[in-house]
Length: 202
Image (tube, rainbow, N blue to C red; front, side, top):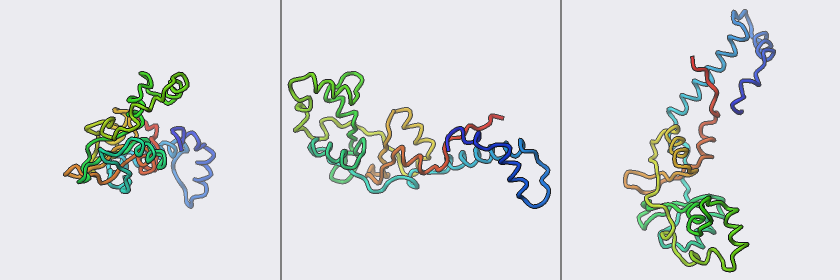
């Protein structure tokens, strides 16, 4: 279902549904459509106002330490098909995060920090553009402090944070800043079940 979900419900669908119900229904198809749309919107808003991070986050988290070689960090990200990994200390406290953008930025891919810019640089440069960071640890390029949330953060607040900062993954920490989970944009979409509806304003 997308934002045009309500356009899929035709008047004939509504009439047939009403005819299938026992008894007399004193309501027009247009009224029924509006009730259905408003009910859907209320359900979406209620869910997003009450759903919290701990209900939809992944508790199994791939993380690295500040001293983890960047070659291992890159391999982990590629193996698990993720765009970023939290960096934690020996007590599992969050100290930073390494993302694809951090790699691109450190490799001076260009001001656009795009994958194709990296390919272009590689094809036009004699040396390897990863040579500068090949033997360096995660702490050399990680973003610190990392943007994080706690387990009670509401879904709509998570969505706002992701949009505001242009990120797709958020570490979830406890009161001691220990990593307890990770929440991705995919988790958020799956958790809400309902996509954002085009709700009436009056």
